[in-house]
Image (cartoon, rainbow, N blue to C red; front, side, top):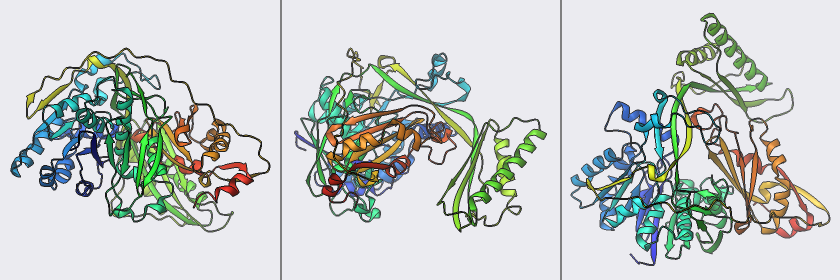
Length: 594
């Protein structure tokens, strides 16, 4: 392991990630670290419920049984270190299970556990708080499923300093695992803000696995056989610059566009990407192709952290369920609406007869083409309801499936799994807590290493100067094309907000994209669900822009009844919008999207 060079592989982007990633990354020459990100807010609530049923659960069990058990010998032989937040709400149980596997294999590996993020036992302390985004009151303690603070990278780095081969955490910032490897390896200090921002960016590019290497990519056809897609590797340098690559002999794509899409993914304001250890400014980041499936990344800037940690609580708020089915033939949309309306009417009549309240929320979404009136069409329909009582939700499911013989013709759906069942609605409640109010413990093979959180730096609330907005100039005749001909785009969620990142295919396209895809155009495109404001941010380093839509996901996650409750499809909607630009500019571009 070279002291001025460090290689980190991103082996997991969510709980349920493909198990072959670990073995694939272990073939990468000189690999030093594997990092695994398993956690989302909903994952924490699922793990919390599992722990309530069995005190030995509450972590990502497949991290132990699949990722580690099958590869421990190679990990030990190659002296690869492993950093993972697979601990969920029970990091020690995860470590105990892994220790049993390590001992059975006869390997000498030291396992560290980082704890302190789990604040559920302190729920009563937060009873007077308001949610940091929408101002709602803290829910009753009896509704709480989980409360976890996002820890930073330094406790993980301290575990490595103490000699850990594997570090298991609960909730931490997704990018903190890769940053911790850099801090330990290069000796970066707490005030090396530009380097900390660079290490955080590397972690952000690794945290979603193959989304940096051609997965979820606008030009997905260029990624080849997705069954063989390569997982991302960051080759770090001591100054904070780094390269992104993937294992040889894998499919996928590493380009400024594929990596740039992931950089913009769910970051909100690119000049104020707030993490526990640093506030990042990615507006000036550059991504340059330096070889086949290899790019260099530079230009991340950082400033002092806020001295506070984000905390995510999840709580139960009633029940929901939905049913997906298809209609075909003439006027399929009208037929679907008639069928759903009949089911809802019957369900509401029964609720009324029982003296029960109406559904809290209903949602009906129709998906498919819109041919001329009277022409054959085939569509999918999703009908869903929410109610405080699971029995009321079950009544809706019974009524809508029970009407399958009293329906317009053309109803069909995949069968075999039985009728859907009500499931809990889990909502997110976010707030901030002083870093020093979250004691962190780090244990190595059961022994406390004595981690101490140093006092936070004084944070400067002033934002860096905003980049100048791109401006167009008079350029003769204009032509109109789709945004996808001019740009790449990717979208995702932040709670109830949606984030859409756009990168111009050529730098000269950006001013025209900025002019066309303004707040009004975005608002109109998402008018059906958008209830909040639209913000736009410019990133001149990659000729890009980031769009943040507030209150657009119906509550977000499994609190939402929307089919796209995480905003994953928003970019595709935006890519269909028209953009006008000079005819000469389009002609000289060589054609746009291919």
